[in-house]
Image (tube, rainbow, N blue to C red; front, side, top):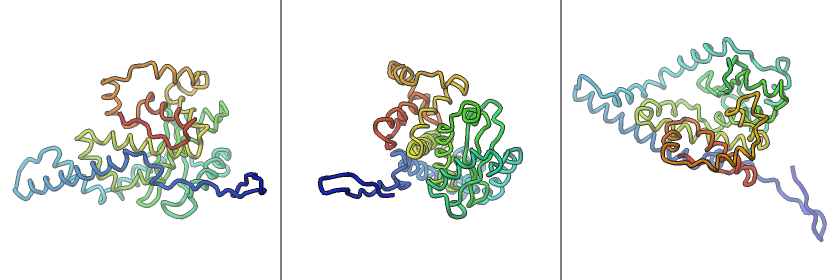
Length: 292
């Protein structure tokens, strides 16, 4: 859509801002962390092969992890289907007639984000699962080249009971961001075994979560602040004075032990995550949250 601004010469057309590419959406730490994770996996695999060729009877734990990582592409076909059906067999698919308000919101969001093709470019099926009190959503593969998104019923309560569909839209944009940025790719799964042992896996995940938040902030900036629901709960979060919450974050000393706790977290701790979201209110979506 083209907009116009007025000038002395009359209306002047202004081209709309281009949609950011996947590279723009990625947090600045994501690619470096993936490179480190890839190199450590390759080195571990080469080391494991050296042990095997020398006939070593008992492999170190890291060598076993490296060899098991190489089996992931073979096992992925079976594991993906099993994991999908073990969870989604108890879920409720969202359709035009099942939760129609949610379906319309999700379909419109998917179209905005470019999910209009086939396979990984198709809009992933959305499912509602019983969260049993847990506020969460997730994206994963249901086939090697096809994804799905699930959202816990407890998170949907804020939309259907409290009328907050914007926060839900942010959450769904975040999850579709994981699909859009290929965070659920099989090759990324290969990095997990070795990098989990090396304690690098949480940092890779944390960078990816920041990237998905950046996608969410681009497509639903007003819903981003509703992420306070994760820290105050679905009943209390609307009573949270957000400005006071941010002020209280700033008064806390963020020292060594906070950074240690954040390092081992696969999602940035709330103080870090919400601080980045706060900045988007004045700086726009292109904010890079702190990794430590």
